[in-house]
Length: 370
Image (cartoon, rainbow, N blue to C red; front, side):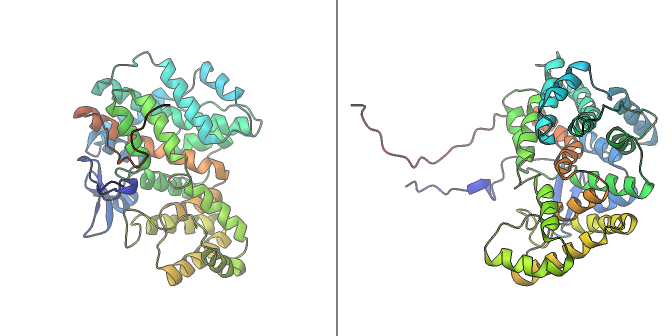
């Protein structure tokens, strides 16, 4: 056995500096470039945040207009992408379709070894605009319906609903969706972001890094947790079963998704804002039972274990009440997190050193082949 200290999961290890985001201990607030996310949710849109994370400052009205117009100009998918997505099995998970679609975009971009700030910013704009198109196309394929082209008269969120469902929902739904994207946009050196930085550190391109990030985010211990939360709520079914369900799960030491966080010890600072908008969705759509079940499960978990919910817990039912299939929740996460990933990829490139940790060997000693 090695006498080295092993930090499983890199817990507590500080591997680099970053100016993108921070959880402020004194206020328990997640900040993007110094701005608390709850303030951004109250006063700004996701497109403001998508600009802020990569440029470091909130856009002026003129910069915002130019940024949103550029996003619209990058929308749409070439036939090579659409044909490949259509060739995937209908039961293919949307995260797998998205991973494949982003990889194809990388194949179509001839600037494979150009990671200059200008080129990476253009690649970011392309991914920001095209990832929603890929998600929508994969969804339409899964239900046996034709692809709906983008509508450049619509905003970012409105266009996504249009491409998925052929219509734009009420303002209340759009606002709740926009808030969720702000809350999911960035969160430090989490598993998927660190994956993108590791890949970038090798000198690889942005599309490769983002493809790797999607693979990491797919896991139920990371981005896939929001899907598992909704599956759990549907399994409980009714509020009257919630307490007994949770008690049985705790007694059997089951992993209950949507609770706990590596960073937050006194509760995820994003949860109150997302809970507020999930409750608004329940009022608007008539899905109050999902909030009732959630509240009971949360109460039992706090009473029995003192563990707080994380962002995935209210986000899952919120997306469900907006009309999205459960398997679409994590791809929607990617729609948002591409902004945080891009900021970290560009930050890594600006002062790069290959990320190459060590391991403590615990196998057999050297021996001869006989």
